[in-house]
Length: 199
Image 1 (spheres, rainbow, N blue to C red):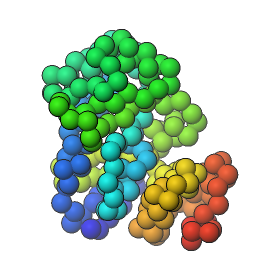
Image 2 (image 1 turned 45 degrees about the horizontal axis):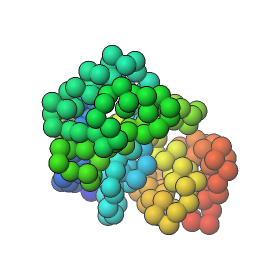
Image 3 (image 1 turned 180 degrees about the vertical axis):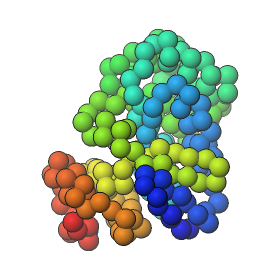
């Protein structure tokens, strides 16, 4: 796998799209018709070649009104997705408004699934507004800035999350904005030095 970086675009070369990649891209192709989005958390490191499993892909979306959500909901149902939390779109929208996540999956499956939340924090908004665009094959995926992803994974602090942070740091080493990385580390009050993540 090779990365070609131009501005905010990151082209992933010599990687065959996995079933998970295709699944995420197919879902996003519906989602992006209705709302601005950004993919965050574990799937980002998987997209760039980290070998580990995941049950869900976390997506933050800009807050939309109920009418727009209904259109999104209806198209996803038509395309053989279902929602794990509830059947009623009013209830699902209420969950989003209450800062809860809703989950969608392909019909008759539970894993993998897509976890969707409205943006709510300052860092969520930064992820959405300053996203990078990862291009794989004919598809593209808006992802959280890598610097923020590294800091947030260190903040979460599980072994898996720290390994994700180290992996992203290593493969993007020559392309990181160290000022921004330091800023995010400071905001989240984490120190990467113990793991070789320096700024």
